[in-house]
Length: 246
Image 1 (cartoon, rainbow, N blue to C red):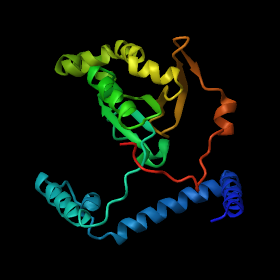
Image 2 (image 1 turned 60 degrees about the vertical axis):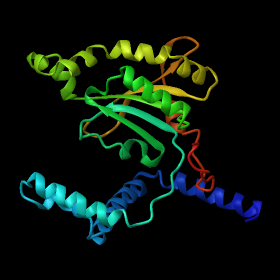
Image 3 (image 1 turned 120 degrees about the vertical axis):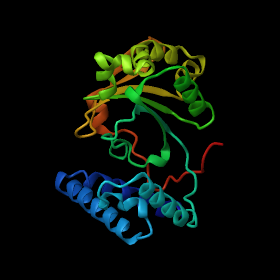
Image 4 (image 1 turned 180 degrees about the horizontal axis):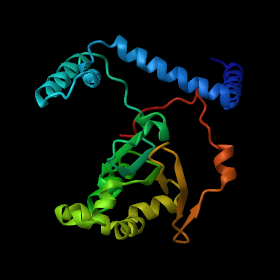
């Protein structure tokens, strides 16, 4: 494809990405995508694990049978090629959180979930791997509203969950250790990495109080609203991906 055609297509893509921000069109697109997803699930009749909601109080054996039947069919289908990994997220294991409503395509995301979204030694090592081996460029540290794990850690139930309670109480110290890690500092100073924190609204999956850590000053700064609204780095649909770094 010659450069003129590529340029024209990129302009059309950018125009479409702008026009779809009109509220009515955007809401229509969300509605249509949900319907198409539901249709795809109906077409994939072999996906027994997708039909668990139809079972009344399923037994462990029914769940295992459904998962095994689904895996048997799925493993015979071609696997989607591995893509680059740009994002690592540390978030709570709460099932109310829908990461696809936050990040979109989860193929670009390393997902680290634990009760309370705590940061400790093992999480720091996992993030080191994400940055050094997976090519991650942005780390999101995400709390959320109505976190049951954090409520437990501050209640009489804490004695029944001593390890989770301890890691929650040590969370702030764990974040300090993460930000002081030489791998993170070097990557941030070289502008290969950004570390952000925010709170997810559990009802809407909206990111609130989004802040970025600046290694040079050692402080957190809120992202400017103008920066968020302008969306300065929208990727071209024609850019493509060359695959996973490793």
